Image 1 (tube, rainbow, N blue to C red):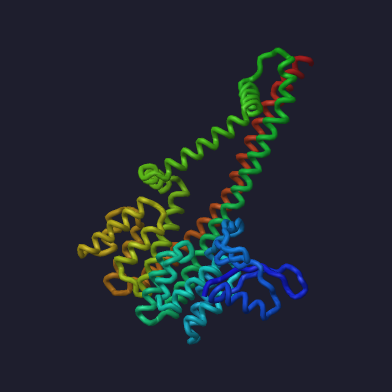
Image 2: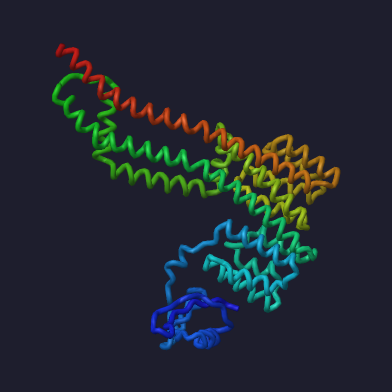
Length: 410
């Protein structure tokens, strides 16, 4: 059944609103009338409003910013797996999930999925109509579970996978918060010194009429440029960022940028570890859920977000279609570490590829956590050192002419 948002008056004459699912606006009005609510407006999925004067358009500003977080999808999957394993019919499971969903968009999405399932559509096809909420990985695993008759097990495995991905993403994002905040604070302090403090002090040097050291001259030049042309600096910075983003989105620019990021010191190996761990975890989860290997590789390659690694996986997919193994082609690409390709080769020979991929994922995710911890620990003193160096240069450039002036006076 579709979900409707409504506004109306209660028995006391006060304005009330909310969201309910019903077969039609007329049924919703009848149900709310029994509860003592006189409905004035009814909206389906926050797009159209049915009022007493006819059909009108309504723009839902709040809904434009409403989105479903990966954490919400992970919790939803865990709950669905629990209810399905308990033997509750799928329609009742979806009804329970609709009632307890906290996000309005997720509630509308689940209500639409439930409606399609009640009409005879498979759960995977119903979820496939909402790609912004349920990814190709999610839909294909659900389809494999429905085909094999082990939907509860697939959902449980999918919930574990989503939980691990959310946990890893949270650690990476959390590790980047401190360096970003420190960099912004340092830029703000430096900008304030250059625009407010330095110009007032350098006025003294202008009255002296004496030649200044090169560092003081450089400081005065940068301060004047920053103070007089700050608006131009902001505009050029914005245009440069826009041009960089546009170049990076182009096929040639993205390929060059992805190749460059994999070669950057410290950052490149970390990005490769994250991609390899995601590749192994996702491929192992798909294969253990019954998804064919060619389809699984097609899904996995789009999750890597790096053209160099995507090409390596695509070449492996073509080679498998021609009868070769996954490990041999990944080893030829040179983009996957030897340990990964050897473990995959052992898994292919022993028939335990899924287990080997899970071991690879565990090893690399643990390595990523360790690297992130070390990188965060290293970034703190480096940022303090850089900020101290910038402030020290400013102070030294100001004090040096003052000391020279004191020597002349003495």
